[in-house]
Length: 188
Image (cartoon, rainbow, N blue to C red):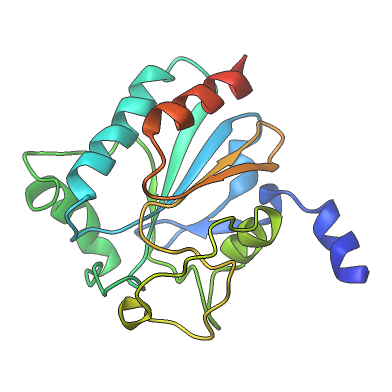
């Protein structure tokens, strides 16, 4: 079909992202890097460990062509009510707090599901369909329509090859060691 053919020609380099201060950055700026794209949230119990793990990945692979790209999202239990200019201060002083500074770019808040979802996330979800049929607690979802391919919760991750092609999708509870191993394989 036409849609499939158009999709096949795409890579994440066809998309851009908005920074926390409103600048538009083409993702082609990251050509040649292995990327881990994460939809994040500020206020939830798993925030602290997830952010520290993402920083640990940055340290582990810092001398290699790798970076995490973080996107704030408020569609899961309304856990990211902050506005963009507050995000880094909240990370630093509230969750995880303790002076935490992300070692990776955190972009402006986006919708990752539903009618107004960011085209980048539409592309990622179509490229890497979700394997788990369980949708979860719909009362905590703030979008419609709900589709089987939707991102289920915060800190879902998409691994992207150095050629900009979606490679693998991880749900929140996937062991970080599995993500590490896959990043290492793409980098070698």
